[in-house]
Length: 280
Image 1 (cartoon, rainbow, N blue to C red):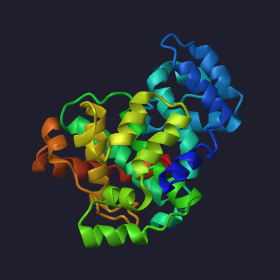
Image 2 (image 1 turned 90 degrees about the vertical axis):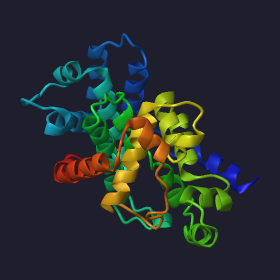
Image 3 (image 1 turned 180 degrees about the horizontal axis):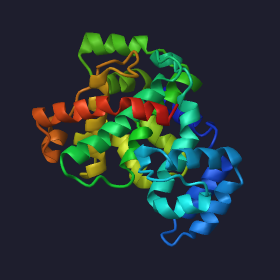
Image 4 (image 1 turned 30 degrees about the horizontal axis):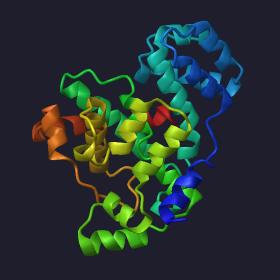
């Protein structure tokens, strides 16, 4: 078995999302999902219920008045935002862990992923674009492959960084040279194993290679540029640091120039305290 095959096989051993979240996601796959049934599924998990209510009452998710009923929360938010909240509640705990192979102390991967998600939505807002509903979720999950490589397999990033330096490759290209697979492909495989929507898997898979993506995709371009902005803040950056190359073509497709990038970056930085409190 090759190193690549070994890594992708290990993806299927990663613990699945909590049962209540899995059931809720399956229900939400139906466009005519019964919101009352959705609330009943979530209510079976007290911890999940508490987290959903905490998030729905936050200003970041548009809370204008206190909501104490889960049923009211899912009706007011609608299927799209409830899905985002459920994914956040499901993956945030594992993203708080230390990611040894990538030199990420406890909480740093979560911080970087949250900044990426906020930045992707900020870019859309600054450009007057309507971000697809799954943009925030895909951005939040964009680095999840590092959990598999850096924690479950304890991949050592040193040889990868050595190739980056000696051969002038991007970090994901060096990952592929050493491991046969990059963390974005591993992340997509994990989300596919968890049976998340293809639209999210697609963004995670091609986030670092927008030029090679089979089709153009607005959420993909937004998450790609959100990731670039997150790198610029320096928050949650591990050993891979700044060894990534933002796509000029993605910026062109979005109509994002240098001035717009700077404005978006300032907006992201201004909102960081609020977002940190949201996912603390």
